Length: 310
Figure 1: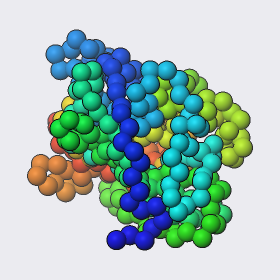
Figure 2: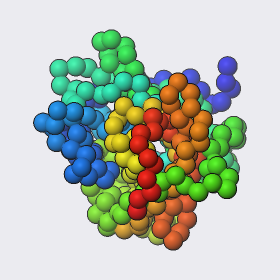
Figure 3: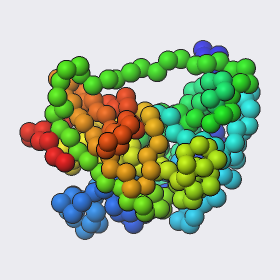
């Protein structure tokens, strides 16, 4: 049994809900295009929820209104660890497993978020990491639709005597191999203002003051928006935009992205195929600048030729 502080602590289950309108907004905000109407038009015969949509539900919960982000983050303290300041938090790494496709609306059914702490780690002066698992579950049947493991990094909130935590597994791109595909996404100065309407209302992504205090020089993009842009690019380039062709997706948040940056994602097939699912590696950079998503990995069914497109 893990001795990590907080490990095994479970938050009370929380109801989550969504409408078709929420699904359409999400697809628009992550870069889906008019040749992907099955994500963007509710009357399309193959209308589907973009696979990563569950990642927003822990923020949105059941609300159709703007949420006080700071108040929502501080609701339930984790026993045995300090109370961290959610005004200085950024994403560390996210992995999601797609177990069942979400229905296009939760209307008429009950879904809930079940959250369990994996561990809380003290990284010294730099800050602290809270790692947790979040499952979206059909309350009546108990079926798990999506399972996500993520880490939140609380900037400058370390040195409380906790464990450093385990090293994370790395998934670098294949050495000496050119990318099998390259995709890009051009953000705008308004991209974060659109993405936040999905339910993640952290002021860090809307106004310059929080980011200036954290040393980012102003507002930054949601880490999860860049993460979702990359997943959309992978699914379109390698999986024919078919949500059935992706099983897992993960990436580490390596550096902040500013609204207006162009993101370029290099994608590699590894040839490692199990039960029809191939491991794909990727790296996302700001054009002309730093890596912003590292440790990129997905399990996919690759269809057609992996064409490079920018």
